Image 1 (spheres, rainbow, N blue to C red):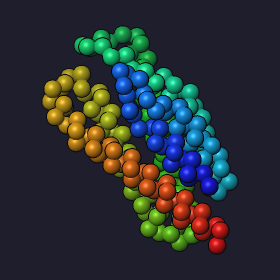
Image 2 (tube, rainbow, N blue to C red):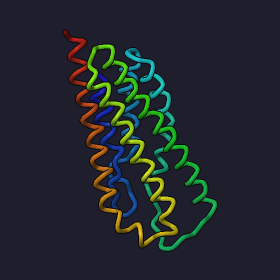
Image 3 (cartoon, one colour):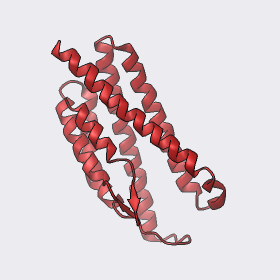
Length: 183
């Protein structure tokens, strides 16, 4: 079922950068997520909605492959364009992940898998909190550069935990919801 493709796609969404280059590019992840959602679209309308959001994210995420690393703050037209692209990307991504979690929750409720349904929406909440923290840190790092540096490690650990919990959710959905259909 498509949850496995979403699982592998989500791995690509975690940022691993070397000299500003994303080692595992997000656009590959969104392609995998798109195909996973295409497989799930007939199971729940939320997956169809998420699929329609994954498609533009494939193209928008191409802009995130390389980050120019410059010392100092330089607000230019390109940085404003980058900010706008980042905001659009984040909003689409949040809605897509919400729809995936809602789809899992609804499918789980239909099969009386209440624990999975609740877990799915709880994981969505954690994902949302993680994204809000990332944006807050990104936007305020210009002003509080040294103060926020001490929070970097705990925030990286929190983000890693949230991503792992999301991956576990997709595996559990694959095991629980696919096995249910085979019975």
